[in-house]
Length: 244
Image (cartoon, rainbow, N blue to C red; front, side, top):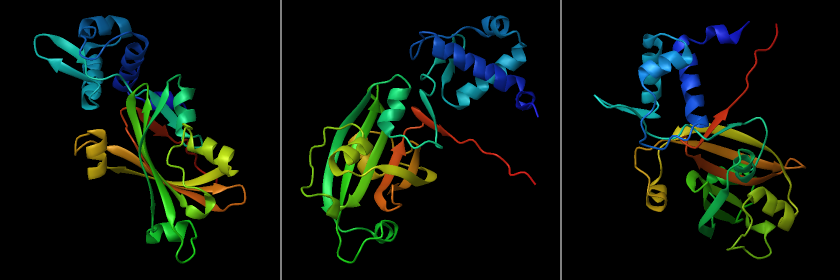
């Protein structure tokens, strides 16, 4: 089956316009080519161009000012990563030619939640340590990461981790190689903590990955809630039907 045939003309035009924006040096609030210019550029009808622009407006990539034209509201999504391969956030950001950054929000030793006890297979009385970090891509907010591990893995609780990648830190300092993960994906609004720390709006949408990471022996070692900014990072999953 040719999947391209199932894509509407307006969707194809939208993809072409996005590609043009990505390859060009358009800045936020800069005027974009007129409808007439896009018609000639894409070789489609004015109706198709208008539908494509309407789709981009719905996604808040562009905005229109009556009598003046169409303007860039934000650069299109910078990172589109597949979930099939387990990469650290640092690796994902670098893969797309961007500079990863980290702002430490805090490190806390605490009692685990019931869900942590169950998923990390903790014994009675065990405590956990939670690391909270803001991750950036070229200084743009990419994700807010909350990673929790059993205290027993640490001889001394680290309150200043210089490594960008948590995976790299665990392998280098603790000899723990994270080999696999179970991930649950859900849209969510920011918590009050995120609103205060990140200065984001209460109605901003994030994509949360709730993940349990396992070492080579299959032991759960890391409990994570990672809140991704969908304006910077999107995830894709390749799905296939089983043959009958």
